[in-house]
Length: 139
Image (cartoon, rainbow, N blue to C red):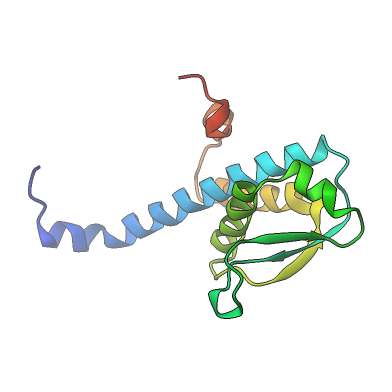
């Protein structure tokens, strides 16, 4: 591994932090867009309540509770990994730890669109092939 000079890292710090923020936003965009697409193809509609992990409250997994439909629809269409990714994407998009929140599940596409706009205004070109979920990639 080649040594890196401290002065070079310090000189590039602002740009590196910007790139990290954009990479995190890109991941959140992909997650929200993927989940929004799956939800659009499902019968899942209406308001939901997201509760993040909170060890102090003895809650050790993310939960998403249907407020207007049967809970079984949430469980049928979104697994534990999806809920973790959703909570992480919301945290990344807001820049804050995920808090309990209620929202219309159909708004995920709108949230993804807001992230896309932010990415594009920051100079990111959205390459749709690269923005596909990783489990859909070929190779």
